[in-house]
Image (tube, rainbow, N blue to C red; front, side):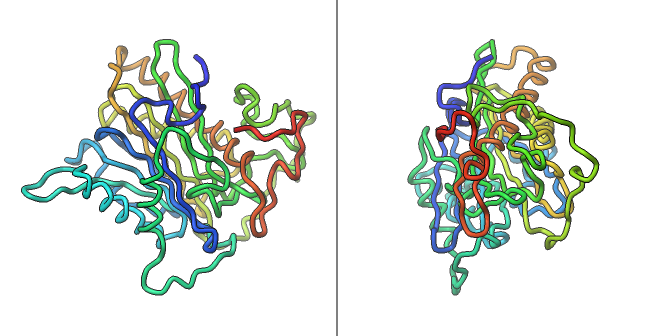
Length: 338
């Protein structure tokens, strides 16, 4: 396998991603747009999720494809971003036709990013509908990481979080990618070091050239403070492949991808997080082996998600009370990675 040419989820053929942010509010929206309706599933393992249309993605339910996915800041206010993407899609004739109506299916997940500061005097209309439409207008194969889109106001433990992405192309040509908003209660970095928990999965120096931990951690370093408001975090992600998957197979990929969170963040899936992973399959490549091939895609999705989490933190810049990883931990290579 090899890293995709962009090292982004858009290395999966048939996907584009767009970002839009409100610097005054220190919040934003990221949208994932398939060129054609994509098979989708979701796995929600956090204890404080904020989601929309996730029940429809259950394999037992009628909906067999989606027209877009929204990741948003703004806590529950950010769920309105899905309205913005729905109207954007419908105005372009993209959605399920029900008689004369066009109804796009747009699952969404949000994270709590109010701790970054920013203005919240929205009156009757928070900015998220407009941000989603702006993100859709900007969607393409290339997009910014770090303080971009829904990662604008994100934090990760005591560091600035952000938007991350990574990809891989398997030996048979199947593409797998991940996109994540890293707004975790837990930390991505071993205590007292500049080493990411998922350091061993780095590819091509994408997070500055990680080195193994120099010593084992003591019990006191492995402790963690849980003194934060409930629901004040959440890591939300999309993993994708160009393989043709059923909803049940996509659900397995979404579940396996959560292991990527478990390798990259500690603690994870807490009562304080709403950790959620959507899985998309664009269906452009047949799945030759429904068992081994599916397992390989799930493994790659988990690895890509771990790498995307590291990149989201590595590419982030200081904002509000959250310092940037690269400001605190100068790597041997030092330069910023795109």
